[in-house]
Structure formats: C-alpha cells, structure tokens
Image 1 (spheres, one colour):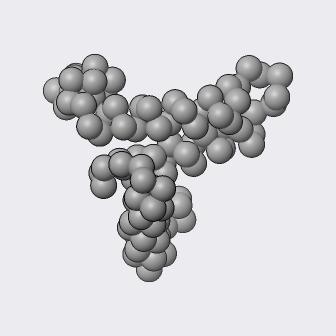
Image 2 (tube, rainbow, N blue to C red):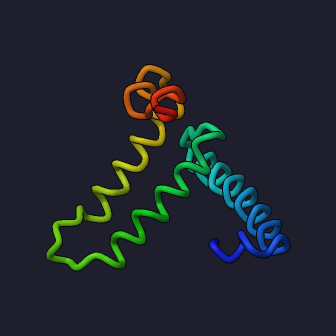
Length: 100
C-alpha cells in the first residue's frame, strides 16, 4: 500500500481492487442473509486487516483477544458506527474536534 503512494498505476490498481473487495464483501454477507450497509464494507475490511495484523504479529502471551472476540468486536463496531448516528458521534471525534 505504501508503494502505491509513489506509483500512480499501482494506486489505480489498488483502488480498483478495494472497490471490488468491498462489493464482494457486501455480496457475500447478503448471500448469508446478513445485512451489511454498503458504507460498512470498506470499514469492516480495514478493521479485519488490522485485527489480522495484530493476531499475526503479537506474541501469544501479550494478552491479545481471541480471533472470535476480535471478529465480534469488528462486526459490532462496524455496524454501530455506520448505522447509528448517535453511537457514531460517541465513538468518533467530530470534524471540529479533530481540527483542534
């Protein structure tokens, strides 16, 4: 991903891949009868990648939650922040707070 910042062609390819991945994720959830709002798919994918990185790189004795616990938190947090404006305002700083 970092290399795509220097190479426009790679950035374009990564962008197409991200869009396809988000659509695929939404489609797979729909096939399972799970409601995943369209704007939640990219967030879920990003959080999944971060959780996977944590699971792979953190020593087992460091107190990292189990994969199951992380998965439940990812889904709950993604759905809460993309479907509930009140919850979103509590979890994420407002634009004005970020600028101060």
